[in-house]
Length: 297
Image (cartoon, rainbow, N blue to C red; front, side, top):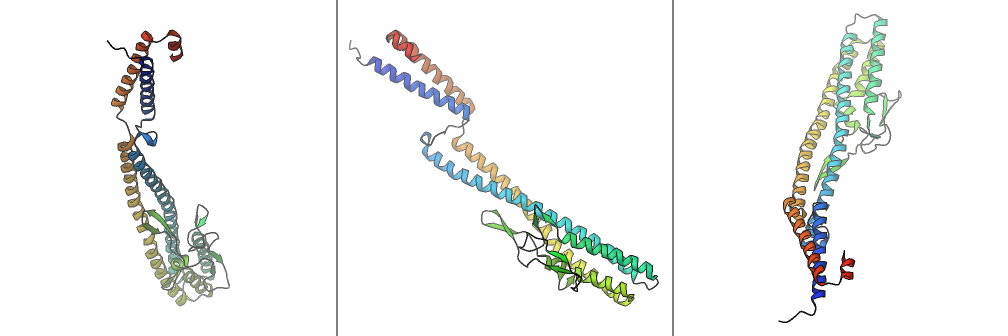
């Protein structure tokens, strides 16, 4: 019989390999991943890098969508309040155009309309998270300032620019309509119509106040048409958010397929690795010097 002269080296190598397998199995169970360093599976690790980049990008799009959705909802709510105020102003205009009011009653209506005007200006200066909504791309300062020297009673300090935000790969969405297009449109000037109605009632000219009331109705219709933009944009964002959330699920599934473990199989591998390591130690105890076995333990 031939005796292997390198039995000690072979046993030590076997124990070392068994220990490495045990450590790897423990790490897989602890992390829930079979690929914890690129060398575990270079191809899967490379795909995982791309997957994580797409996941990060999707998270950013979801964050953009959430932030923009809040802005659009704030804008739509503000315009809803403007419509309510304009309906009130139209009712006051009809009441003030009857020609049977006393001057004191007419003055009371004027004061109510001035309050409506101030409220509309305040709503036109609505902001979201510190940015003014209706100033075009000029979002750092209120777009409207009261100005009695102007026909419309205000000065517009915004611009006609529009803002857009990326909400998906290769897709962006416009998120605002300039205030001048909403509140001072050529075919429906909300600010100007309110001022004309106030002026007509102050002068006691019932014909002029009736005309101004009709113009205010037209201006309200124009504003309502502009408001449709915000409703459509909110619907687009809701649909896009559903798409992005499904994309997140798909990417997570891909991650699990690439580097995830089968918990049952991982538990079995760990048990086998521990058994192999302990068996190696038991075999070594029978043939290696006691001092070396003490070191291994």
